[in-house]
Image (cartoon, rainbow, N blue to C red; front, side, top):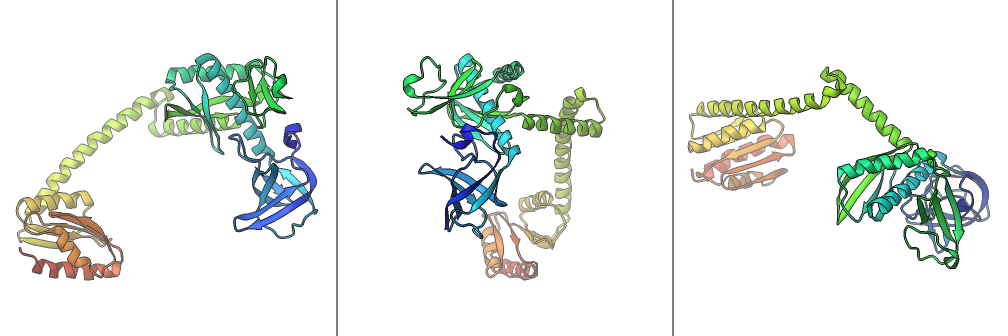
Length: 384
C-alpha cells in the first residue's frame, strides 16, 4: 500500500534517501518513505520539491517509487531530506479525478455508456466513451452531475480482497486480488482505484463540459471541475463583456451581431475580389511589351490577376517585390518552371510551379538583384 493511500492529507514530510541513480535522462531517487503520488491510472504525478530541488516526475518501477529531480548535486544515500508536495496541484488533480468517477458512474448507470479511456491533464480532463452522445444528452448529463455535487455525497475509501468483495457492485472489474482499494461515492459509484479523491462531492463545487468530439466508435469528452470550471466561466464572462463593449449591443444581441458581421465580411470579400479583378485587368492592359519584368508593391492576389490577364493576351509577365517574392506568368509561350529553374541556380531560393505559372521566394535580400538579372538572361534563351 502506498503511503498517500493511507493519508493523502500529508503534504510535508521528512525522510531519508534510499537510493540515487543518474543517467543520460536525468537524476532519480527513491526514499525510505514517500507520500508523493506517482503517475498512474490516468492521473499525473504530484509536483513538489525534495530539499528545495524541483521534482520533475514521480513513477513506479519494480514496486519502488522513483522521484526525478532537476540536479544531482548534494544528494547521497541515507541523507535526510525535507519533502514538500504542491498542495494546489494535488487538490486540483484530486477534484478532477473524483469528477471523472461521478461522470463515468452516471454514464454507465443511466445511459448504458462505458468509459474506455481517461486522460487527466493540466488544462482539462477527458474520457473516451464507447458510444456517441448528442448535445442534449450532454447538457442533461451536466445538470445531473451538478445535482449530485449539490447532494454532497460522501466519498469513502476502503480495502477488500477479491474473496470478500461480497455484493459490492464494482463499476468495472479489477484484476487485483488482494488489497483492492475501493472508492465509494454514496451509493452512486463503487470503483477500484488507486488515485487521490475528495472526501465529499461538495469539494467539486462545479462541473462543466468543455468539448465533445467523435473518437473511434464513441466520443472523447473533455470537462472541468472545481476551480478549473469557475476559471473557465470567469474567462468567458470577461470575453462577453469585451464583446458587448466593442459591438455596443446587449448580451443577448451578441450572437446576432456576430452573424451579421460574418455576412458583412463575406459581402466585402466579394466586393474586394470584383474590384481587384477590374484593377488587375486595367493594369495589365497598360503593358504594351510582349514580356514584362517589373518590381511592384502589389499584393499576391492582384499580381495573379495581372499575370493571368497578360497570359490571355499572349504576353509574359514577371513580377517581384522587395521582400523577395517572385511570380512568373508565361502561358503557352514558354515554360515558367524552366525559366525559374535557370535563374535559381546558385541562389538561395524556394518555390515551384508548372508550365504556365511559377512563384517563389528569394531568401537573401542581397541575391534578389542577381536573381532578376538571371531571369532577364533566361528569357533571352527561351523561345519566345
